[in-house]
Length: 428
Image (cartoon, rainbow, N blue to C red; front, side, top):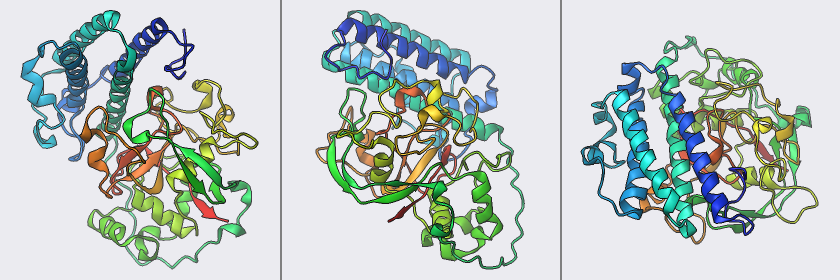
């Protein structure tokens, strides 16, 4: 059987193989989703973990609702099998704060199972053709909501008491100059033309269409910034010195009394810092005399290979994604020390580009040239508002079906709840 990461639109892949792989991927993805429900309490199922996010139970119901809407109702043209859920689980049905009145866990699991049985029956007889892209989109839709549910479960169970940091004035730290440090911590990326984006059947609308961009020479960190490195920013009073912060970030820091990343209490020195907002990442980069990379630079670092004309599919080359390439899919239960997956190292020497933590970039989330919304306008287009920053790479909880060098994630710059970190860059 072909791998789930093999381009399914390739000419040597038969319709039968496409159907077999899709069925296997749908089942494997659902198994990973259901593992999250194994020991949920009623409170974790129904209650919001944070005001910006829906309850975990809503995400489960929304997965089934969306699958039913696009496959059973729109493609198969069958009547909605569960009309009582149309308002509750639609993305635009209820405000997040009103989504706590949910059916219990067994009821929603039965709903998910019934919808899945119906869609697999439909899959047996539908001619995939151009519809394959929609099926692959739904697979990724479930993957993304399962990762969000993982954030929420972590928030429910995370210690909410933060370490107290004295509010006295800290001595001003001198601006570090990155050239004074060992260049072993950074790699040089030669500039040139990058064909940015992806038009395979798996690509989401915001990844299309591939287009050429010119990238200047730059340096980028070998690994995401670690807890040990970030601790120096905290110790030097980084959260109490406005010179490192964007004005809106400084206002946010004061308003919410932010003094450290969200997932800081049990962080280990050599793991990537996790649970930082874009504001914090940008402030740290300023503190060390660097900056966040643009998403074009990040993609250049992930896909460029010396001596090759075309960009690589993966940071390490064309070898199919496997567990040896990084920390993803939830199998380690959290972040791992940086640089532990030599097989996943990029051609230019960067580690952990896929998995462990999402990485903030300096770029706003915006449309690529020739953008066409799919499968509906609000999926990406509604967020081309100059209010969302792009993240790249994936986290330890990212499912393999959305783990690729061209995948674009996006959040408001004040969000800490995502399993996000960052690496820095400098111009030559």
